[in-house]
Image 1 (tube, helix red, strand yellow):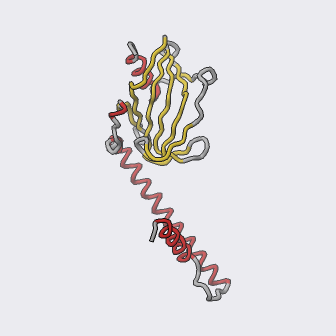
Image 2 (cartoon, helix red, strand yellow):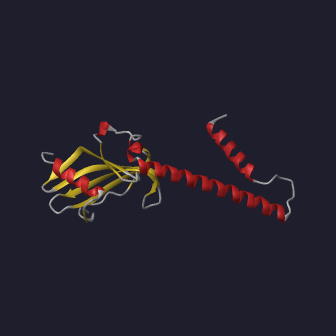
Image 3 (cartoon, one colour):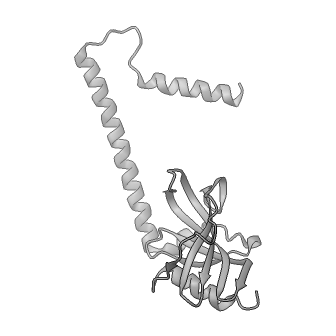
Amino acid sequence: MTRSNFCAYLAVALIAACLPPIGIAQSPEEQQQFWEAQKAKIAAQNKANAELLARERAARKADPMAWVRTLSPLSSGGWEFRGVATDGSWAIFSTDHQMKRSGHTVTLWLRQEFPELQRDAGGDLYMSNVEQVQFDCHKSQQRVLTVVFYSENNISGSQQQQDESDPKHAPWVSIIPGTQSESVFQWACANSHGK
């Protein structure tokens, strides 16, 4: 049996398992009981999923680095760990590969990883992304030029690229003290000399 035939067979079997037996007439009361049972199953599964997610979040908050250690460092791309959220909801990496400096402006790539599915502006799901970012080291500002979203962690799986921004039209935003952007900004501006 080919994989596509097996998948089609499995889909039909799953649908059939959820339907009432064929050929047996159901009274409205029996049909209502069937639907109530299905709703109860779905509610129980949703509750179990929510409890699992709460346990995973609590574990990440207790030790954010435990999750980060499951990620590939991808050292061939020069990626270096830069930081993790205190609740373990994201981790950020930077690379000095392709880092360029022009006057007070530094252009580089950042990588973000997430333990839970995220949605981009178009509604597509992703677990990691890379951004080409420019920092103005004199004005303490940044702007994003390109974003590529990946369906899996470690910038793998299917990818979706957001349209590249014309640097002339990409908006500059201020670097806010104490944020992940500030720590990367400080690193980039301090380490880009000679690039």
